[in-house]
Length: 284
Image (cartoon, rainbow, N blue to C red; front, side):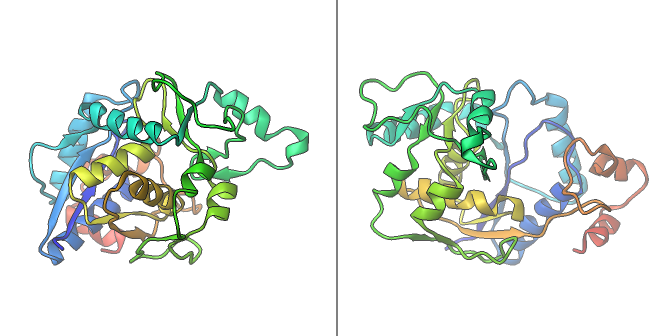
């Protein structure tokens, strides 16, 4: 199996130290294995993506010494592929339309009878307000769509296991059980208004299209991996090996975000940092 991995940032802000660590680690692992490192642009959220941020991504990664094949894959150009995957799941009876707003979900999840609201890898766990007892019929609507988790899991004969070459944030294994998926993940959104597809669906479809064999990303996405592996099985797609690396945090132990411009790669460059010293700062 040829080693192929990718780095897939969103051009919604400057890359920071956490991005640098993830990209460098993936690039180093691909080079050590004699494989390929790909750059993919996650630009589905056109309301937040900016051309100047995309240009900065290319510039920062090149400054770090990374190289990748051109042209890069842009998710904004892949909408027909996501639509085809959604149609496949709809035809299987595994999707249903959902008209709940974020405020509706928050209100239902925080109702007194529900107790403390539960969070999963997709945010607040959806309470199933729009879910029906039987699969919707007819043409797939142009509405937000959710995966009926219980119905999807009923299609599987055995619990799923994914290969984890890194470590989960609390030592979790790669075992996916129906009880955990229903209770701690819920009916995740796969099609969102204005985006065409959710992160969970697009990343699975694109990893298969690019023959990704190794997914290298932060521990914050460990919980989402079970969603991706489930979708891969439902869609008949190959399941890569997964490596979830440690997170780069600030002095208070908080995970870095794009709004933290003080730790942007561009800031360190402007202060005279070299690619080599930035590698050392990251422990690489």
